[in-house]
Every structure is written in C-alpha cells, then in structure tokens.
Image (cartoon, rainbow, N blue to C red; front, side, top):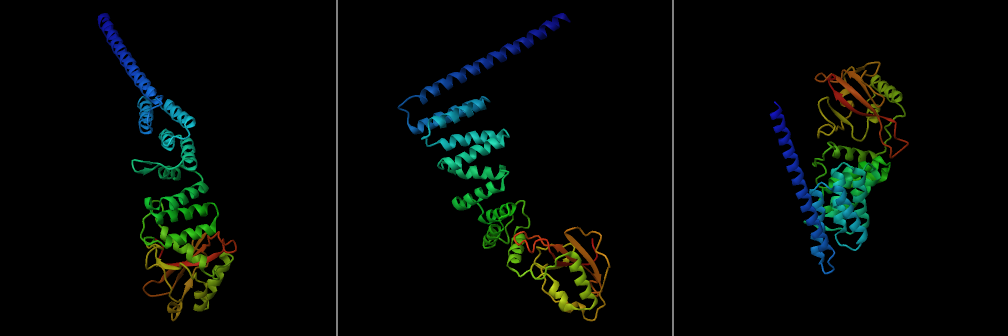
Length: 346
C-alpha cells in the first residue's frame, strides 16, 4: 500500500513538474516573440504597413495568451502616444470588441462611441469600422436618444448596408419613446413610402406596416368621432341602436382603421378593414344589447355584446378602445368605436 502511495505521489509530481516546465517554456517563447516584435516596432525605418502588422501581431499574441488586460493597455497607450496613426480606429475597435465579449457593455459602448465621434472611418477586410460600431451600439445602448443618433447615421452614411425600410420603422419607435411625435410621424411616412413597406418582415416588429399605416392615417384624420369618456360613447351607441338610428351609428364609428372581422382574424388582414353602412344591417332586424360591458373589458378596451344583426352571424361584439395618440394631447385618452368582432367570443 505504501509503495503504491509513493508511486502515485511520484506520478503527480512528474505531471506537475512537466506542466511547470511546459508553462515556463511557453512563457519564454511568448516573451521572446514579444521582445522581437517590440524591437521591430521601435525601428525608425519601419513602414506604415509593417507597423500595422507588428501591432496587430502583438495584440493577438496577448489575446492568445489570455492576457487581455495587457492587450487593452498596449493598444490604448499606443493610440494615446500616436494620435496620427491611420489605424487607431481599428486598435480601439479591438479594445471595444474585447470588452463586449467579456460582457462589459458600458466600456464597449464608450470605445465604440469614441471611434465614431473622434476617428475617421477605416475599411478592414472591406468592412467599415464605423458601420460595425453603429451596429453594436444599436444593440447595447440603453438610450433611445442615442439609438436615434445611430439610426440616422446609418441611414445617412450606410444606406447600402441596411434595409432603409427597417431603419425608418425602428427610428419611428425610438422617436415615440422620447416623445418626438412629429419626427415619429415623419419616420413612419418615410417608411410607408418604401416599395417593400407592406411586405417587409422585421424581427421583433411583426405588425410594422399596420402600425405605421394606422398611425399616419389617424394623424391626418379629423378625429371628430371620438368621445370624452367610455360612458359617453357607450350611452350614445346604445341610444342609436335602440332608436335604430343607423346614421348616428355611422357617425360614431371610427373613420380610420375601423375593422369588422371574426375573433380569429387580425386587424392587419386585407379584408378586416370595412366601410359598410350600418343601414344595411339594421333595417328589418330586432337589435339588442347587454346592459353591461363584457367582463373581459379593461381600462383601455371594452366590448359590448349585441345580437340580432343577421341570420347567419347573429352576435356582434362592438369594440371600444381608448385612443393612444400622444402626438395630439386633446385627442389622446379619449374613446373611439374602433371595430366589430363577429360571433361569440372564443
């Protein structure tokens, strides 16, 4: 047993000794290579292209050894000491990308910002450093105001690299986030002017076209069908139904984006938007409604169950919603009759 123990200890000691020797050899090789590269860098006769290759090799040497702190220090010091270096934007891009990979997003954002604001653009392997910085900044920035700046820069400077249609859609949302309603409407309008606006699929924005179309159309409308409160809208609609006043119902209906569809359909469906007159469905029918709004109603949406409209679709739910249009404070928060759902609720 003791003999086996000694053998095990000796084996482990051999592994440790071999590992240390291997690490020492690797460190010596690293130091030797670094020394040779540093000597080349100090040569006053070095050409710009060779200097670029040497700096790049030193940075990658540090990175390969897991010495990322040393790599960052080396590159940032080089930029500070050599402000006229043509490749400074690339050196700082390496720094920013390292921080991004390590999850240090605020530091990555600082360096990406520093590049686009203080250094000329540079093509590396055919790719623009500024464009790459802007792409990363859009992803990591927590500020809508900053993202507005980034989107506008991409639209102005790199339209060939992106979908301008998508850029206008995302830009409009950022303007909404900061309350710049006029600029949001302008961006939505520019979005709608693009040839592929109605067909584009934008990740995270499944109803981009419908949202833009409804927002722009609503902004241009008179909005004179809105009511100050849900109670006022409900009372007016019920009174019109009871008196079979189809003209009043037509007047109360939203004149923009009004829909009439089944519960399984979507407002974005081509056949969802309707412009029929209530006269076609009230004549000769006995229309009724519940005294109370449906229990599924919320502070911003309400459903009134009605029936007797047609023999084939007897039940209609009238859909009322609070107007969400901060661009016009006098209209924002009022109520409108926005649509009809056919049939019993699913």
